[in-house]
Length: 204
Image (tube, rainbow, N blue to C red; front, side, top):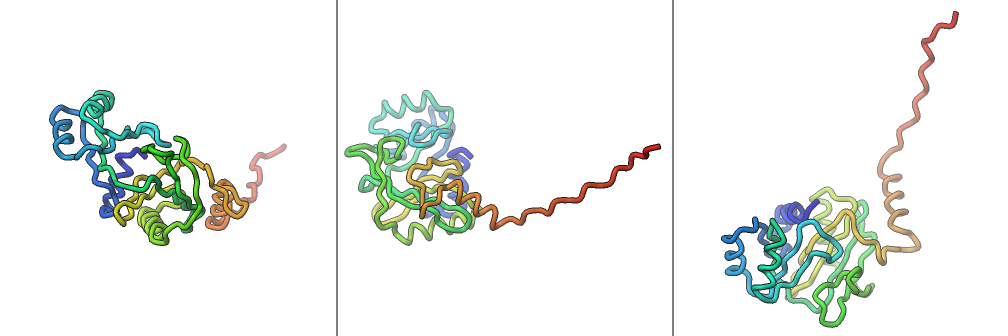
């Protein structure tokens, strides 16, 4: 799933918890529209990247023009004020498997662990977990990592990924692979083996 598809499904189930986003073709008209619509700074992303790669904080017009030249699709989001961290909340089945804060390096825009962020397992707000479980249920998702940010007291889903980094994903001695296997084993019945059909070959 690309960021474009992911954002559109979030618009459908949780528009109030999705950052304001524009997804348009990279044309001169749309470039001008973005610059007129979004106050600087804002966020621009490549639609097929992950782990913080291809995500840029646009702090001036030239940075955006450089981004627009390299991308056929403009994926632009409002910049959410925050205290330098966001949450990764991982769902397996209908339960939270693991959740933690990703704390960015001093002065850094990105919080991803792959980009130098640190893990913190201190209190995860219940409201964030409840929001993630509701969205996962509404979208019929049973395995994903959701990135959640608090900005001005409101919870926002930045994105979610079916394939996500597994840094920090060890709960009660169980790895994420073990948890997925356990969920599949408990949730889906194993088919009984069938009895081989007798051979119809006639031996004379």
